Image (cartoon, rainbow, N blue to C red; front, side):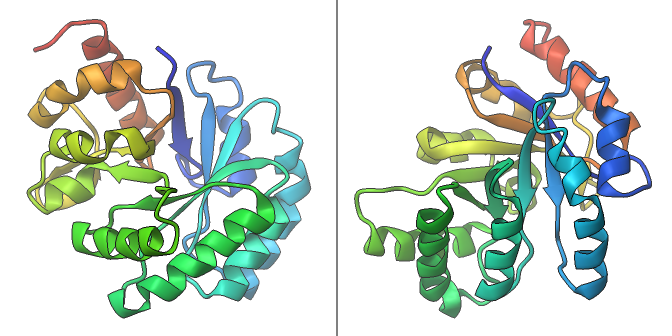
Length: 235
């Protein structure tokens, strides 16, 4: 199996660097997604203070980065600071779908400028499809890569296997987490019946599977269950 296991840069209380160093000896974790959900002067200063030390770990981890919902200038600054060691970026569609076409053009410019892929996450299907329409109108021959967030799908009542059937060839990253008790970012377990039909896809998937949970204990629970069912042990 060719997929790479990833986790967020917040699995214990602490900074990006503290989390990455905590994970350094975990041979079962291959990648880390740097979380930048916000970008202001305080966060910028804190991130820059750790940036060089994080770069030094680029031979240990594949780094991806979750961009904030921000304007073009901020996205440009973040990618300019990190593109030398970050392999890909994840972004949400704009909250206001009327801005989708302008946003798609900005993403295309950033991809061309920095030569790094930016994958689009399904916050909701309507927002993702609107952004895809804009992107494909602009570049009909190039379909952007996608980040499939399983909990976002489940929240909308969409089975992840149905998303895979429609978009599987374009999925580059998976944010693997469950939706239970009206809450996202829940660990996967024997209760995650929706996961079982996805196993054949996971077995041939060559991208990044990120356990999008913010507790190392919940990540370990999920990872143990995932490895169990991937070996053919289905409860």
